[in-house]
Image 1 (cartoon, rainbow, N blue to C red):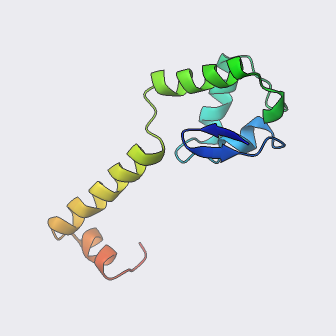
Image 2 (tube, rainbow, N blue to C red):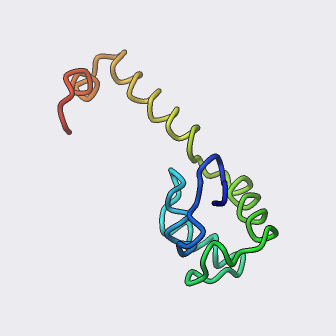
Length: 99
């Protein structure tokens, strides 16, 4: 298992599938990331060297992507704000209704 941002990535998965386990990374962002770092999408995670993994980490950090804990916190604070101002969407969150 490979650890990136506290997530364990299965070594036998393709890079695209493996990186999608990181909350906040979409397929589009992963494609851009891999093309920028010259990593093939058909490559498996176990075929990546430590240098490639380090470059992936650095690129995600420098690209100002909001992922994992920060994204979850932003989402939670946004919902809390809606509830505090008693908007319709906030009230629906309190009542556990869908959109």
